[in-house]
Image (cartoon, helix red, strand yellow):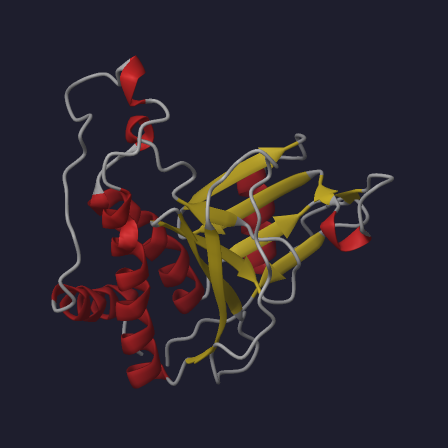
Length: 233
């Protein structure tokens, strides 16, 4: 079986031929200034994310038979603030491996006034577990290499078979549909790292280790656990 390092090098090679924009971390060695908050100097360069997805798609489909299905329900996106005049378009696809017991990823490319954001979720779940970047203003800009690394960590984790997503019980609201109710917590494990958001359950790292090893993670009732085999063969 080819290692994830070999696959990532193939993705780097494919990416290098796409003419993707590249820029350094503008805050290396200095602090963020107040003027950078809410300012969007060059939103178009964030297309580096969609081009990186294209490179991953090319390598995974050609070498491992992963299919990228665009014939899936497309969700209409509108700004959360009704007074927000931003133009939002979204294109969703599902990435599936032909290997058994694997997770299918839902990948949504958002264009918000010309700036690209990538949302990733497990296809069987209604909610996405990550958006890259979380914010696209100048103050939050960490450079193209960091954006690519964030995306690679998730796609590579699914390919390698260590992606772990644990969603807490849904917190329903009277005016919300059951499939849009917010989870009480969200734990995402990729490789040796993990992220956590929400109310505090037991140690997130211990939960991820238990899920991956097949042990009981001792979660409260109503949790959803997603973990599957790798896409590489």
